[in-house]
Every structure is written in C-alpha cells, then in structure tokens.
Length: 163
Image (tube, rainbow, N blue to C red; front, side, top):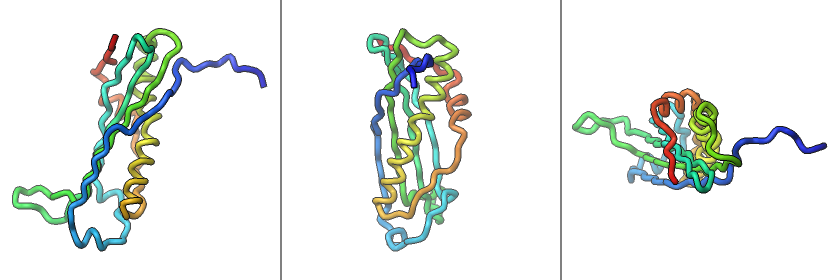
C-alpha cells in the first residue's frame, strides 16, 4: 500500500493519570462482602478540564476527572450518607499539531470533544484495575454520552493559550 494522502492535524503524544485518591471506610461488612456492587449503587461524576494550547510547543493539553462514591445505606445525623468507598481520579493528555493552533471551529470540535473521549478509556482502565486489585468485583462503567457532556461542560470555556 502507498502512503495515504489523508493526514491527521494532531498527534496523540501521551497521557498520564495525574490524580488518584482512593479511600475505603474501615467497615466489617464491606470487607466481608464478595457480592457484585452494581453500577447503580455508585455515584459517578465526570468533569472536563479546561483545555490549554502551548503555542511554543504547538501542543494541546486536555483532561478529565472522575469521582466515584459508594454511599452507605444509612444516613448520618446531618441527613447525608457517608461514603464507604471514594475514588477520585484524573487524566491529562498531550496532543501535538503540525502547524499553528487549529482554526476555531475545528478546535472546538476536536480539542473540547474528541480529546476527552480519547482519554476516557485509559482512565476507565485504571479505575477498573484499581478496584479489582483492591478486592472488589469488576466495576463496569455505565454508558455515557461524553460528547454531550463535553459540549455542555465546555460550551462557554475557551482554550487557554500559554506562550
């Protein structure tokens, strides 16, 4: 096969899971449990980070954060349920462009929507592995419309330019 005339305007250089905090309440019932903890028992919150463009390096940095909690069935005196399991994780990805900054419409679509979507499987894998290695039954992420989430979360946020 010959070289394709289709070239990407960006290159996914690398990613790093850059934030990970995992807390488990010392609870005998939780420790003894071997049952599956269905996804509907967990509170899951996604947040998309403000993307940045580093002009000298011709690179974009995008990222997302996830907070997952398993709440106790009983409520405390303040009406809140305490967390049995709390997991916060974040990921950042580096994407280089061959030319200068992408044009506005393309940047809106690729940087704000596609970059977080590309990073999610890496963060999902880290979280699933951590929970499995911590002794919990497999955690299955619910299906989410990350394109819609990024569209809503970043609609009024501009890409931060760093010289």
